[in-house]
Each structure stands twice: as C-alpha cells, then as structure tokens.
Image 1 (cartoon, one colour):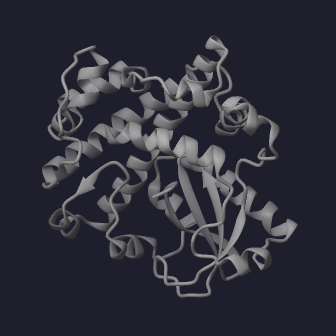
Image 2: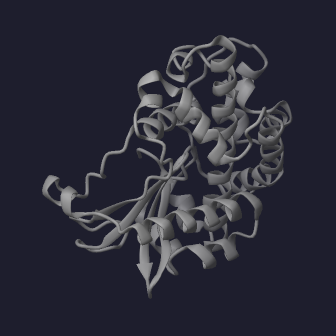
Length: 292
C-alpha cells in the first residue's frame, strides 16, 4: 500500500538524515550557512504554518498567507502527483484551480494526520516492548491500527478508494487478500468530487484519532519522543533539532526558480518544505513528501 510505504520511508528519512539537498555542491556546503536570525525566522514561520495547517480548512487563506503568489501555477507546471493519489493528465487539465488547491491541501492533511497516528503507534509499541523504533519497523504494521474504523467505512463508500485502497480495507478487517490496485489513476471528475467529499469527512476523524493517542499529541512532542527512542545511536547523537533549517543554493532550475536561488529547507514530517524570500518575507515555494 503506497500510503504505508510512504509513511515508513519518511519516518526513517526525517529521523536520520541531516544531509544537504542534492542541489548544493560539496564546496558550497561549507559556504551555505544560515545566520542564527534566519534560522529562528524559518522555525517560527514553519511552526506558524503547521498550526494553521492543522486547524484550518480555509485553503485559500492558507495559500495567501504562507505561499508564493503563483503556487498553483507552479504546481500545475511541475506535473507532480498529490502524494499518494495519482490523477491522470487528462483529469489534471480539466479541474479548476480551486479543485486543484483543495486536492493538494486536503490530501496533504490526510497524509499528515496519518503519519502522526503512525508515529504515535510506533512510539507506544516501542515503549511497551522495550525496543527501539527501528526494531519495531522490522515488524508488519496493521493498517487498521493507523486508519480509524470510521474512516475505513468512508473509504468503502468511495468508488475510487474502494478499489484503489482495497488492501487497506481488507487488512483493517483481517482479510488476507492482496490486490494490485493502489497505483490506479483517478480519471474522472466524479471520482475527484467523491474523493474530496471523503477527505472533508475523514480529516476531522483523523484529527480526533491523533488526539485519542497517548501523550504527546503535538507534532513537536511526537517528533521529540521519536528521536529519543528511534535508536541508541540516534538518541546519543546531536540531532535534537527536528526542524533543522538549512540553506540550499540551487544549481539548476527548480519549481520555477532559477539557478542560484537561495532556499531555506526544513523537514516537517511527513513533508519537506522549501522556503524562499519574497519582498523581504519568507514564503513557501513548495511543500512535498520528504525524500520524493
């Protein structure tokens, strides 16, 4: 299941990597440094975004407040998929900017809450079994433990998800039946509208599921605790800075930005965030799944 594989990968990626992105050369690594003021500004900006992202369903205001003005145009031009959902090229050409924006934010929020539930479950299991999180990752994870039953019920009603995510539905019920449908493209506006309706109902349930987990419930608290018990080596290393802002100098065009553009990069599980300064203020240039 693509959702689970993404979640497992990004957990390992975010908790263990502090490397510079490929867009900066070895020689530039020594020169590409942020000032303490820039680091504080970037942390404060991303933390403010995280809180608004968790709380609001007003995606237009979120876009206007935190993103570069032409973000939707840049996203369309990139041809990227929406994380764990693939839209056909024909469907992408038919949907409005408003639908494009809702799909981007709502699917990202669903993945965000799924990742928090997953990490919280791993922490609880690791503490109960007195094992490190990397040892727990060696075991199979029951997707029924990540996706709440009321959300599974909504999936079954959705014409796209009932087929594309049949493995998740079956596993949540203890049915050992594998399918190969999770790479199916979404082709029609009817499927899109149904999926957006699913997300509107599912996201509050996912948020409630996060709050029902053992403490901590906050993103920062979960990440701090995950770092502590990820492994003995990680716990003893100096990797406590979860957000870890760092400077990248582009060596090639990226997301509409030319070579030489100065980006501030931050990992906000399950996402990687690229910030750019516009008219003296930080804005999100792009937010995508960490490691993609």
